Image 1 (cartoon, each protein chain N blue to C red):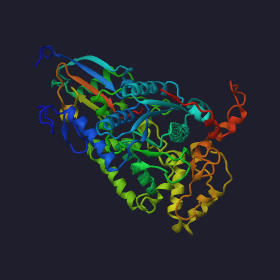
Image 2 (tube, rainbow over the protein chains, first blue to last red):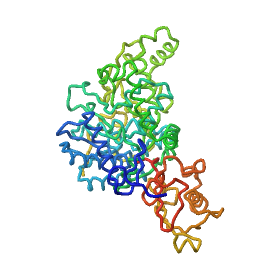
Image 3 (cartoon, chains in turn cyan, blue):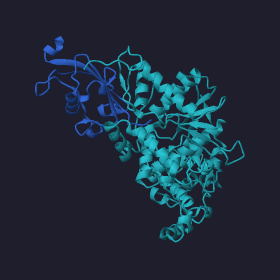
Image 4 (cartoon, helix red, strand yellow):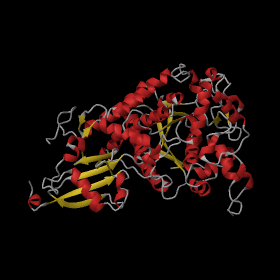
Length: 437
Length: 110
């Protein structure tokens, strides 16, 4: 087959076939076009303000590595005036995260960015290795997801950063849209499709770690192009599978997306756009209520309990969040429905500690979140750690309480402190050490 | 086309990345010598190479993580001399001596 020429410069050989519009591009034109489109996403949504300090959630994987590289490039090229730092979460999984953290450390040097690595052990008193030892491999992803969500916010707060960007790409968003559709969960659509999630009006305390804005600048970028960008720019990234869910990438929604892409590449962006349009039609969604309701969406609970390419996979806590969203959206229609009786029974159940994924779906709700409550979800703060939560005790603290109660007492540990064992995140955070560099 | 082809064998470089190397004994780069023609006597193409890799190179039993429905699993990119295989005729591309074929997984996380 005769080599085709780049559609833009018409001189170099085309190496890339763009999935969104079948344009054939050479290496140089592809890199520039990819960057320019991210720039367009950033400017058209007014994502950043000059002088803002931004933490890039960095795992060492392809998405966050490309995000860090592109952010650096654009910040310099278009003079955004941003102060960029890398924020990594160490789940404490030996043989998995150690290697990818080495990649992040190299990236920090290559990009000349400050790096902060925050460990689950520092934050929660538990590494994921220890969690798995206790709860087994089944359901451990729930713990990891809930912990990571808060960890990014807490890390950002420690760094005095108000805005965290993550590497979620178009494939991730499309996957989540499909999952929500498959579950009949339209209320969640607006949260999963919107580029920014934040809780700006929740608290007046500027130091509160709940006041963190999250955004995904790569929301419209194909995973394929992210990988090609990394390849053609020779970026240093690390690919692996979590040893506790080695075949997570075989998730059916993911497979569906990739199969659709093979048949019709534009399908991924089409699903993203459809998700956005549907979100506008959902009563009570961020868009539907003119953004007023946005403050009721806890950034800490809104996203999936995902890890790596398994982003978008369902977790127990997610279902609880969905139930609450449903209850606040559909309160008017609820009266007289059988399901209301069932649900309020669950809501009134005394508080058993969820020890498994399945049980965590029935996390007892605070009275204010019951189905008889009018429209907006009432967000408060966790009574234990102060993290933004629609329940009295946030999900991380509930999970921790279960873990701590069941921690084997015959297990002798150095530095074992019984008080700390049963306390929430707040105590663990007190003496946290954030290492930079 | 080349001398090597006349001898019935061609030399190529095959690379794996994006996590795919885990299925190939953590080898990121292989130098392979493959027959210039396949079982039917037609010039070896990517489809033949993929079969060859599965049958003779890949030790990992999880073939379905590389090949699905007789073709490279969706989500795995194939670059032929750095060009997207979709620009080169996908698995019908006839391999030439000295070609570099890269398989990159987009499915793995970080």
